[in-house]
Length: 351
Image 1 (tube, helix red, strand yellow):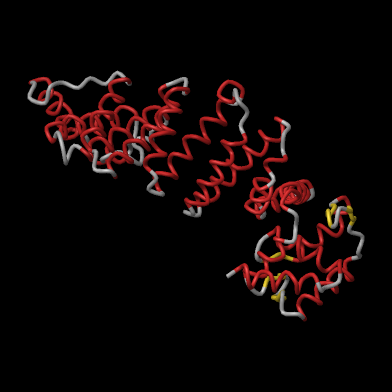
Image 2 (tube, rainbow, N blue to C red):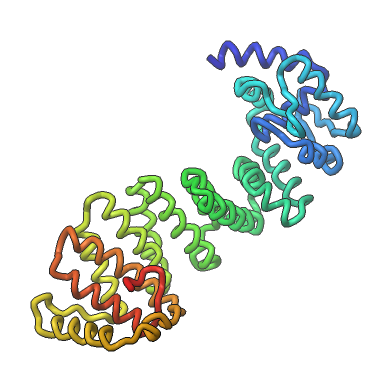
């Protein structure tokens, strides 16, 4: 369909005034719509933004009012619509046609320039509002970013964008940012940028679990477990792995891995039929029975992050024991109660 409609739209765009063509191509790089504030930024700050047209570099020098007047040609031709402060392409095919008029070997550099222009001329609050736009532009121009400093900065920007997308429950989009961030890291990133690498990989696995991409979760889990320095650093990926295995009906493996992780914390698991397990349960029951209502309500909040992570692993493992190894249910729940009584209450506490 684009072969026919796209060619017609491209020919129509080429009949517009040259400055209007250039601006429409710029809008096509930005997406299906563009706010006037972004366009004003290009007009006021983007004098260095060069368009390679016909082998000649041209600088944009048009004043604000004239620039918007130029876009009126496109609006009159039905290529753009003006809604409030936004210029919107009348159809996706028109945007694709405008974008196709930019030589392929110049697109990456153009996206890079657009991304940095917005990033470097926006306030911190404004950057937060434009975070996705900036990250998208720089990612599309990523092949033109070669300096380690800038690639690392872009990896951090993708981490920020990915977390924002996670908070909005747009997990496919979030995964694309985390993956792009990982791709920006240098070869020895686990040594040079350990915390950044750990966060990007752990969160990438988490959102891919949400997306149902369990094979990718397994691959990222292997990478993190091979490079993470401490047990605490491994806990988020273990958490994601257990949930991924459970979603694949591999609950037996999930329980076995969960118990092995808890044993690394130093927790001991007596045999389910062992008298020690029964005695442990009865002791915990007796403690709870002796507590007054005020004592029960005054249990402090858990502040030990490692114990809180252990509780998360514990609760997930306990849940899966309802399907396999039911004999471990009282052992795990007793342990969860003991941790709450000793270290405080958290979201995963069973009281």
